[in-house]
Length: 338
Image (tube, rainbow, N blue to C red; front, side):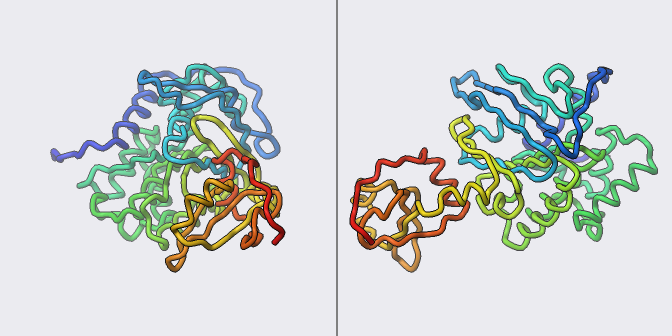
């Protein structure tokens, strides 16, 4: 039966990904594989990418990533999606190298695709097809040709993503959170070893966000899961390792707890009136502001108390993020003793 299909960017990305799989034969290359439990599995070396409009999306990015959840933080336009699309073999970099389990991704992209699960930022669906039928169709495209094995895996993933009870419902009628969980289900088809999720919790309500966090945490123990987001809480809640990307450059990397501890004693808070905000911004290295009960809370980076009225504030990952974006500047005026 002919169906009216809405063209959505996810379908374009997924078709491009599947077309590459279908149109290329697997290149059998003898490789020395890394120990998956004790060593880095994904190596990104000096990766750069520019577009025809002159935008330099990636600028000499290098990362080493082992099993587990890895958080990639950055503002909109930082280059996160460009990095994810490059890792997913949907585009080539201008320069640099990529390795996964010893395989040169740029020389042998098909071997990477066979181990890849990808949930892109813009995720759409064939709206009139049921979750079971659509996931089964995507499983065929991913190479699961045995009908019995395919059905078993599809039902298992629907159960794992808490969609089993609605498996016969049209995916176009799913809520945003249900659609994201369906996106993870399709990304897990074929037991991939590298899973890329790009801005997965944007727009989700708190309950669905927590469900999604539980799901990501569950699948991230024996695989490499790259979580790309601009939501600091996602990385704080899920990722033992993280990096911050801005203007296409990697500006910070480490364990969230270690990065937070580095800022201990250097973040100062003060409640001010809105009318004095510009004055404070001209005097101090203001990394962020928050409005609480109509008053502005000012957060300043300084090695010592910048002025009277400031109190020391124990930093969280949000302060690490904003301090990194502001370049860890220390041009603070000398002030009074608190």
